[in-house]
Length: 313
Ligand SMILES: Nc1ncnc2c1ncn2[C@@H]1O[C@H](COP(=O)(O)OP(=O)(O)O)[C@@H](O)[C@H]1O
Ligand SMILES: [Mg+2]
Image (cartoon, rainbow, N blue to C red; front, side, top):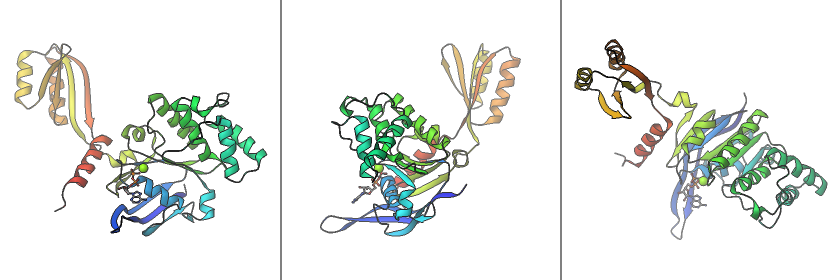
């Protein structure tokens, strides 16, 4: 697949206040987003996600480095025509109905009244609000507002959709609605880049992930390439464990606790766990479950955040 977005050493330093104090919002970010994929930019608040996105749109000028969108320089008319954008906190006009709002947004982006009306009907369908958008936005549920907020990003049928924190502030049903829309956009052949500070949103839907912490991109790739596939620990749950076997396993290093009438044994490696399984079965114990624990995105994220917070030596 062609590259949809490419950034090379993208950096932004803001100067704030009377003394023009430097704030490094984005430092040396080089990444690629492939055409047709869902790419998640994951990072805590203040990491530099919004600033990166604004540079892709041409709203903020890079201090250093460059970006292209569909092969065109970021911010150029040709690049802007290819993309749709949902800002971080979209302001909706609460007194308009949903459909009026979308007609208005269409006219703002240069469509005739007739085309804006046609487009509004199509968008309402696309974000799953058909038949529900004829009331004032202030009467919408939060999930409906977020769906409606997504719609202007689809004006002009863009091949690339950039969404800044599209799931923030939503309840689980609202998040699922937004996920479903993102999946649908990919199924239609579009590329989606979205930012989030919520790990589970990335784990649930992204083809590839970029982790941004303290203005830098610490990792970028598929989840399986970022996470160490090695087994960290093995948890065995068993019943009818002979007391002397339980004592022996603990002496050999297993952690043991009782839960709901069963023993939960945790081993630091695979080999002793395998041996324990054989011993449990051959001594008449009942094996309930065996669960290998691998690195999770959460543990990688925490590790990177700690490394960034540690004073550099
Ligand atoms: N216009 C601006 N002027 C000065 N500092 C800014 C501006 N925009 C963002 N920043 C700073 O840049 C850093 C990154 O912000 P932002 O890109 O909004 O992060 P995120 O979207 O990951 O929360 C923050 O420290 C923020 O305060
Ligand atoms: Mg942001």
